[in-house]
Image: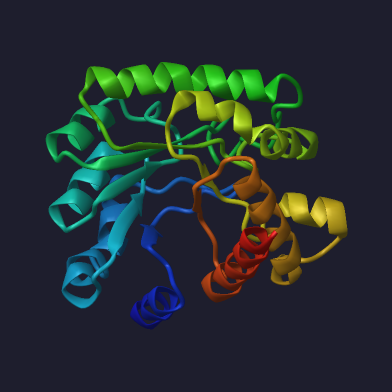
Amino acid sequence: LLLQIDSMINAGADVIDIGAESTRPGAEPISKEEEIKRLSEILPKFKSKFNCVLSLDTMKSEVARFGLDNGVDIINDVSGLTFDKKMPEIIASYNAGVVLMHMKGLPKSMQVNPITTNVVDDVLSFFRTQLTLCKSHNIDSVLIDPGIGFGKDLDANLELLRHLDLFLELETPIVIGTSRKSFIEQISGSSVDNRLGGTIASNIAAWKNGANVFRVHDVLEIKQAFDVYNAVEVSL
């Protein structure tokens, strides 16, 4: 894992996001004790080895506290601070940043009855509420992630990507995670190991519509795509 992290940083990653509990559709939850046990193998070593912003993907406040005690800078909460009501207090007490993600339900069941209509309005309304919650706890560093693939069907995912510009009214950096996701397979028929083209296309589209931060697996290839695209845009 340390070698993989080093490779990603050398390829141009600005932030490393680490998580110990799978959030893919259908994933079984694990206990906070197991989550901390898994994280204890890497988090205490991270800052001594890497000069990079560290994000922790967790929904649990006790896991977040462990991470923040071990150099984590940002808590990436896929529940958008709805799973554990203690999470805002923990984040605020460490003056940490937070990524608020929108997800319908929980990973185990989120694709059983996904959002199919009014997705932009629903997600905007959710973020307005959660940004107010952050403000009430004096959490200043906040990013929003509309949660592509998290409780949405194909049309809803595309609608969010198509209308990301509507989220600019929130005046908050927008995070997008489309890397290797199943909606690419629904469009192209490609297996999980063959979705780089769809990942690049969706990230470029998201950037054009206002996204600022991109969560990806293939750092080198995505950075190269952005570098070339930006060079073309500048020369136009």
